[in-house]
Length: 626
Image: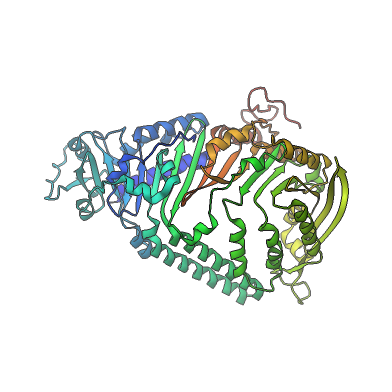
């Protein structure tokens, strides 16, 4: 029944538009999951739920207006859905709708479209069925013994429907509709997705439940097929002289790792929830997975650590491009890296660098880093473009500082062969590390501060291939900075900025830095899942501050971003046997991006807001700097 597939696609498009054009304030979760999930048939492998059709439609309309999207399909998404489906009467607009795939595994294995059942709430089933009968059409066929009625959809194709507990069941085949029976156990689905899955199911505007345990055989088969195809492509590249034998081994190792990781997740997982939630504050998309007890994956997701806010607060506030932190007691990153290193081929220079770093990685209890906006001159000269301050909580920070010195010094002269032919036809050219380390370069309030440098010399052959991109890359691979330790924490900068390292030491004592009383803190409350183990923030204000002046020098319109523009966020939470990864975009930030794109286009094309007119963003925004 092509029309049902078309309707389902229209729903997916509406959700995708909301996700792509914007990025959810979570309300307090109450126990349980949406009661409408009890309508899902037992054993369903995929269930998409819209807890309230009218609420979801209203939120999409609000988003459309708030962001200035001007998309007709979002003005009245429910009305558009009913028009697409040919529904004129009988639908319960305030009710919950389900879209069910009972056997996705077979569809994956046969590479065919799966059968989809629509479970739609109705106030009057007969009126609902009459919606699929145009004026002057012959009466709908009588229901079969199983209660199934043949209906004619707007595209002229036959579909099948029956009533079940206040819902209309529509499907592609008579047998699928006839065999439908409500499972009657929403709680069972909740148990399959764990604490975090239930949390987001109970606070979503639309969500998909996926029975990963049932799909595991089909997904494992699909992973194997995909890896085999990529390996074949790499073999062809090696045979054609486009890849060295050592690089072929490296790529095949990585493919094997990806396959192993994918299978480990699939085989360890029970259920998955992908949830979208919308509010006047922003949009959030969350993937929550429940893992089987004692599964291999849980070794890397122990949870229960102190979280990330305290370590990020040790870094000073200031204009930034990106900031992030992770809690190694909740997210066993070092164990994961160690497992990966065990699979890496011996004698590979790049992997040997990682292996040498493992003793340092294993000591980290918490980590935080901020990429501050660099001085505009740094982008012109290439010196100091990577303006970072990082801190690590460790057991013995003095010993850690000494070990870091030894590691940096050991990298001096390390060469890594590149996957490109040499100019003279000899050995492949190599990328070479040059490092230095100076003890006690500074004394700041009685604290010893060391200085280090790290440079990567790329071979001329690679520089020529990369063109201007090579210079940009070296801005972020060649740096000189300070390193020190205090109060059980190691600190390091990637620039020779005494004020930054001084501020880092001071903020480490006060704990009033990033994420305390700022826009980042406000976003954290909405973005980071319970049991926060990692958080990452991307600031468009910092990006504009960094590239805006340089763009203006090349004739681009000047842009001024509000200083308190909230960042985009990505967070990871671990609770019980479940984990949740959440992506969150504030509406204010999305609106700024949309308006900026419109204004820049208008100025460059000479339209409204064109040359001679400077756009203003936010109340009282100062004039652009250039």
